[in-house]
Length: 492
Ligand code: G6P
Picture 1 (cartoon, rainbow, N blue to C red):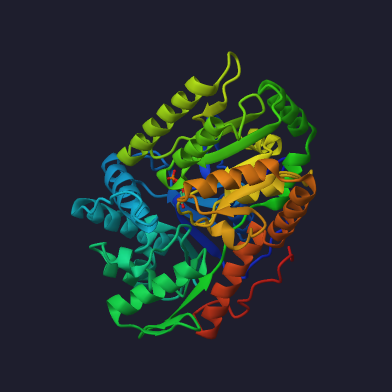
Picture 2: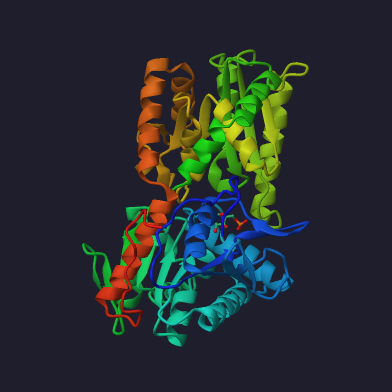
């Protein structure tokens, strides 16, 4: 099947011999007027080509309550919707996942809700995913489960199907044991993940936090250096796999004529300021948006920034709007934007341009290109792909990235201006350093960032995880096709 040239996932992928089944809370598609279309996002971009090449399957939720269409095929990938009722959306998704686990796993930045009714819904939905996977996965298949919403699925699936090779990747941080231990169902979660052959984390700290938690809670036999936990039935390998972006896709969009035109239009609309500062985040309290706005305001107040020359564009994508912590965060940010604009804007020229919107991918890339200084200042973040997208979009080799030390991306993007966002003076200084940075230094740092990102594309991330997963299963002699090796990366 040939794909249209503008199809975002049309590039070569390696082909594992084993069939692959992916499970994630969300299916990789959105409902559109004419049917379904692929959702935006790095994970979808990375995995769809792989699944298409192997005739694979994706098991997940449509994102709408009580919406359970029959399995269907999209662009060569089998999609298996898992139904989630309106009540389960409240309890499993908004409740246990996003009001319990999410704050706890992000350094307990907000109070978590620990509620047994929510936990029961989490168990029930995880069971439903395990059943759907057990019913659909071909013999000897690789099943790759994603993220904090589905941590019980590996064990539940292993109990149903011993022939499968089971991997899990956590996209968010795994907290230190001292925090994790607060969770009333901590042992069940660790046992759930130990159903895997391979558990992957974004950063080394996540991997060691998980091993320590397993040792503390289950008295397991673990080899911390080798990152293996021995179970009576199988070995659980623990690995570090920092996720990335589709660099080629971002670069190609950034290079397009329409993007260049849009970029110039954006600059003009903003009043042709000397420096455009940019923030792009889901409107989440982990992202440090308020702190960033306050740092910007303090620099306007001290005169180190000047509303005639410096403007800030803040894109805040709506997310999890039914959860109270998110509603509170939105109110705080919008009040702050109002206060700062009230004080420093001029007629027709606000000093902060605030968009509470989900922007299309090409508009986002044009904004990245227009942004002279990108502010990525989360308190805690599994990776932060915006930081990587910004650098990949700067095909002009210019632009400065200010990046929180607490984003996973800081491990790799060491040529960003790294900052501790909890330190308000340090954050202000980082912004000034970025704004005033000499062109020569800007270009040197951006070249280094872009080299780093090019070395670790999202496709490479998926290949590496799957290769390691299959190798662990082969070493254990897991039931599978005899020729169960991954084709060399780059093979089609
Ligand atoms: C983070 C999580 C993902 C999640 C995404 C969007 O990146 O790691 O699992 O899908 O946020 O959040 P949502 O709740 O809308 O799926």
